[in-house]
Length: 283
Picture 1 (cartoon, helix red, strand yellow):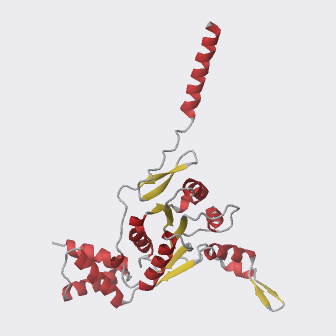
Picture 2 (cartoon, helix red, strand yellow; picture 1 turned 60 degrees about the horizontal axis):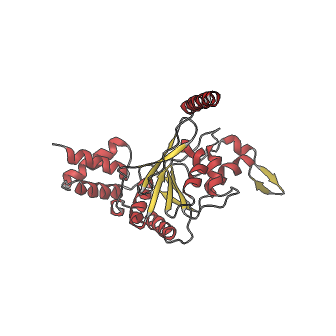
Picture 3 (spheres, helix red, strand yellow; picture 1 turned 90 degrees about the vertical axis):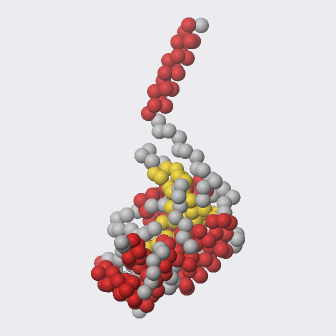
């Protein structure tokens, strides 16, 4: 029937036009990969992108943080073994190995099927999508957010609060959230917040704004603190990295390492590694 054929033809053209303006479907994750990044899309969605060359770190490369190392390894081991474990917040001095320790803990258990998903702070609003995507998977996942902190007026921390503890949905048993920050309470506390503190029958009552800002960090069950390196700690780290990169450690190398940290104004594992790269790479 000519009329029916014309109708079908017009309908097909309409479908083609609609499909042309609709965003393409998100690619399916390659679940054989061990590391992923969450990639946001212009249409407001996102997808898990497999990392082709993940940065694996050996635990021996981390110096002077044995207490923190043992605590994170214990927590991760419990998680991988299906036992109860906590979300972890690593805070403290810059360059002392916070994010590197998370990658080392993942490396230690990657052969047991542990996977890691890196999520940028700007993509925290997608956390519920990530939970829905991986929540029914048989594997164990570490959600990793580096340098987590929020400025005044940001609202993405509310999505993180809900995922950690506070949503109507039960926390997923196959997922933990590991985050690093240079700021202990993640959200800045202003002097004006303290002006709202009240005295009720001799008992100090913090203001609602302070309660709101502290409550995010309290949703992490395990806090690990990192501190600036002493000079001996820094020299030991520089020694390790120079030898790891094939160099020779002697008095000249030690003096160069000391001069390097003085010009940088900081002592840390990161500064030691940067020195070693420069020192060993010299002609």
